[in-house]
Image 1 (cartoon, rainbow, N blue to C red):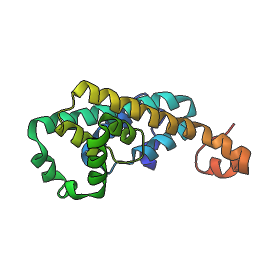
Image 2: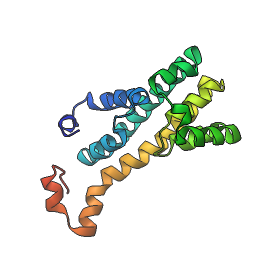
Image 3: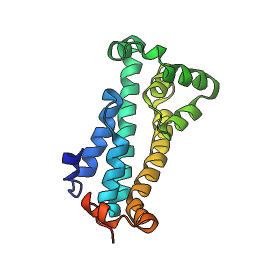
Length: 176
């Protein structure tokens, strides 16, 4: 992550972290939250662009997953994620999805919970792609805007609260 953040001020960086967010729907090991928060700390004036890029990327990745699931179905996803349908996240999401529908997708998209089970269930339930995409985007935008805003303002808050200016400078974060 540190190697990636050397490029945080480049013009291609926001679309690149958006691409990482899209890929995270298929790989599930990319630390998007950490990348976004630390990138916002390093370039606080770009917090909105960074949040928007990650939101769009995450939404497009979820849309891609939903389209593939509509075509291939649950057996396809179980090839990549064996026993996914037995995980606690799956069971929790399935119960709530049957009860509350797209509200669950929104809550999952806006929270730190893994969104793939909600996207999979919504897709398997033949939720219209436009509705699913809109709900995911609004939830992800809310989540990532809050994270990026907090990340962009955290150095100043830390300085005011604990006088950590030297430690922040040592970490490569300039505080004014």
